[in-house]
Length: 258
Image 1 (cartoon, rainbow, N blue to C red):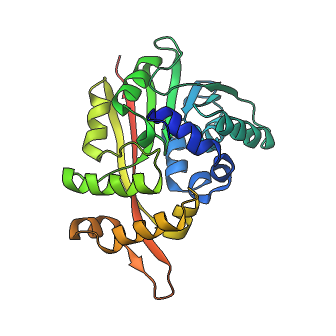
Image 2: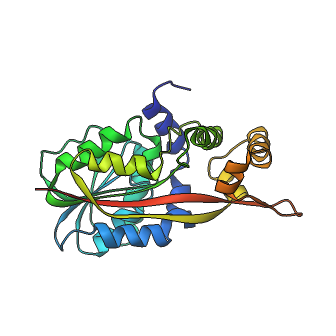
Image 3: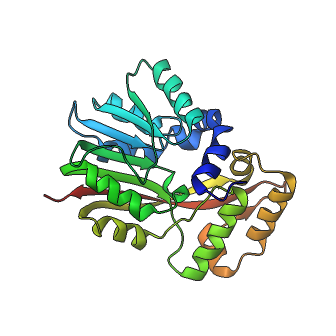
């Protein structure tokens, strides 16, 4: 597999695009509704959804009256989003782009969103800087992403766990780190919320087509996790063989200062 993280993501998700249209975790849920609620610009405002995946945030923003641009680096994913939104009779523009190099002028958009993708970006701080550059003063930047525990040694464990399941995983950051990304580029945080979401381990591994050896290794990492990690993931092992664990998702919204 390529050493380029962007190429890894494209190769990985190009083959999985349809799963991310139909996945209940991605197509519905509290974080989706909350992000759309908090990041929707005024009716007719220009909204960019980065790493749009199945197009679920873009769809929600369009239904709120925004003029939507759905963007992704992976062509298959972008086509899946286009088909999804067209099936909902939603008009949008579509663009393939790198989240860290956005092809828009300064102060051009009313809002920028990104949900469940930034942990794949090589440099999330650069991504946030670009988002802040292209929104107008008073414009909105909203991100939802999985986060790591605040202690560095614990974050190393959770990131190794995530990368084993999905080799295109880059790094998940903690809530304070994300808030630092925002404040460092002049985005005033007006909403920061962490939610705990219970995942079915079987679904989680099937979403990435993990092979049996990888699934076994992931199970071992959960079962043999140190106490701090067990407290973070709160795994539950059913006698019948099913496993659940907890993911922590950050909903972070900032306003560009004038």
